[in-house]
Length: 405
Image (cartoon, rainbow, N blue to C red; front, side, top):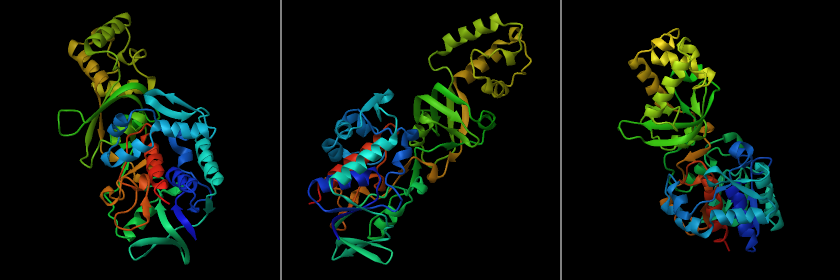
């Protein structure tokens, strides 16, 4: 038996357990994996983008689903509070491009270890079991079942994550538990996920990373759905990388989309045209295929020339004005067809989850079942890449942990 049972040992579960125990509660954290924080340990390519050092207003602008639901939680536990907590636990942090906060060590495991140590210091008990059901009596959560075994508790917190990265334990079990006691689960979708393209350009350039490029996405409208400068990579299935993952959050199920890559975003068309004229005049006796070494990565040159429709052996000094205009157009807007996303098990974050209308945003307690709480990614709240999703986990956990007495 425990005063509070927390199901799930990810960032939201660990931080809920810590805060609940700090308030004097007897807390039992149940995790089915052999260790806590397995998904946390691989975030940010193992570096862990722990939060984003921005204002509350900027933070909420980066939340895709239900930002108003998070207003209270972010106000009570901000990115500054997250940094202060980890600094106090002996994990110094640093701020990088885009206000992204990382541990100075660049080791995600330092974040996990700090959370686990803080929990143990406050007396949180850990149990390795797989929770299969929530026990409810007279409209109140009174414990959980792990197969045939029952564990009693005055309150139950579901912090199992979403449906992405199932090997880490984030396998949709939290949604199934929520549904079993009457909660609504909104449509589950991959968020922050690589994108699929049938275009030969992608397979021809597989493994090529492009830095400092501009990426825009278009649907049926002439107005772009999304634009950002940054880094992307071609793969055998399509495209991935930081800019692509961010863009995926903006795309609905209305595929296909058209993606355009601005290979020279720092130069407007007029300036770029002058550069083309200069480069081509300096190498006027060379073939077209040998005239792009200063403009493009070598792996992209031949696929790019194929897309221009100009024979690769064409001499640079014989290019027509129309041919040069085609080259210029593709340098500023290289088209890629986007036909879909990779599966949800390859997504960094799950979109959709427990319907926020059924949760009290000031406590994270269920409006349907007394004593039942939901925190983190299991909720229908997700945000763009940049540390925002982990901050959601910490803020909702703080509110929840301080609401259990």
